[in-house]
Image 1 (cartoon, rainbow, N blue to C red):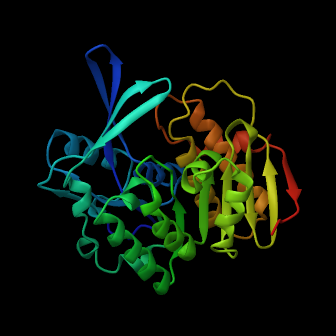
Image 2 (cartoon, helix red, strand yellow):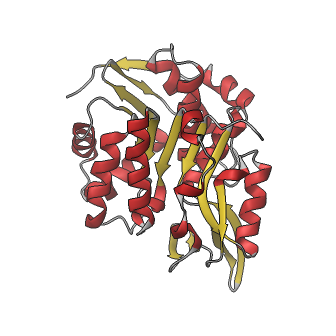
Length: 311
């Protein structure tokens, strides 16, 4: 690749270790920000994942998967540090913990990215546990603020995890303040605001940056797109769900693709495309990015309703 990618996702790529039975485990490549980069690339926009992985078997698998996804390899840094692992010791319900003391992801260095990459990137995405792990979190928040001053569009998906306690509040405020697009689920809102009144939590989040566009997903209850010029609601299509892993990453990746590809379209069209992608991802096992033709076909049958913007 010689040209610079139009889309970059900065954050974590990790290995999921999933229990498959007593004493048996399966490894899968993952990471929410890495997944979003793969989604946008699969839909057809030149993309990259900016982050650091280890040089061992886990890091090498991530590097190979990064290349197989068509992501610009110049943005992936391999360093001599341990891997970041998510140990999923229960699948129903999901229970997990992270292993990553001084791991590779924490050593990401934006100064090592290709020269002039900011000029090529129309959108840069942030989120996931990378924004809850020091010192990487400060590095990424500073990078987002610098990119915003440089004129790039910023998207943010907090993707709540248990380690995002009160200490994460400042990061939530800082990232929402610079974001042009924020993606959040009802589960995220309960965790981030530490109460069950999701409507109040969503209103509090929007108050941090009323000018932003918000993709608010509610699982089987569909999704909302809210921005200053309007609000839209889409019902979730009825499909056979194989796996919900990666559905949120697919929805935000598809929304960003839609905004980049059809900026003139109304919010309802962008929401329809995002919901279609998230639904398509549920038809696939694991966090597999959906294909463009499948998303377009499903988007055609999704009903969208205009709503009144609430303060």
